[in-house]
Length: 286
Image (tube, rainbow, N blue to C red):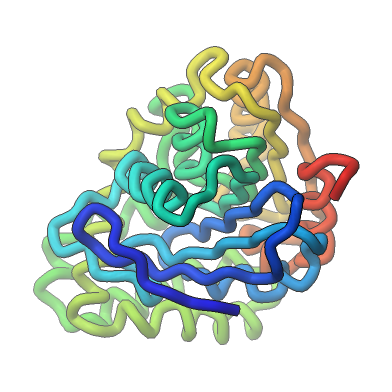
């Protein structure tokens, strides 16, 4: 793996390449809120050979810069992702996003169609056709309401609260606790706490972005929606509404896959199944 920091719009984003260049369509993996590129470590070896794979840390996450006043909305993350692909010479790619990262990928597909050959949206957050569903879980929404308080407290308070809030995302709580310790270590610093607050604020400001991304025929590529059957952050009714919205946005070019006995963190809990789905989204040549 070859890691580097790339200057994008006045900030540095960390990204790394996996595998080797080949004739296949590049694959770009985008994590969600409060995780990092580490989310994909078990998926990477399960991807087909001959494809350039790029993995990044979103602004304010992992090794990338803190936001320092830069927007943390879905649209802002999407603009930076699109610019990063241009800088790295990735002309068209399969975008795979998890959680908020799925909304970021869908936004890019709706605004920069030529950059996207296909989408794999894994347990999407924020993505919806109306404002009622264009939101994060009620747990995270409650945290966002207290951002002025979190900014006055020690960083460990918010990090610990995020830990308990996100733990239900895992079926295996012991493994999940270890993963969250890794993801949230970054947010136990002062800069990390401020980045987490900026991301919490960015959720509500992203609602219009995600609704527009799923407007009628907004996405011209094929889409695969992947959900965990036990995801506590998405009800069955909301999943059905999202599926219907994706059918409208793509002109019925969407496919749906549900992985059994998996909660929200599909890349960690079902890397074999997700690797197979990504391979299928690449087409027969993969």
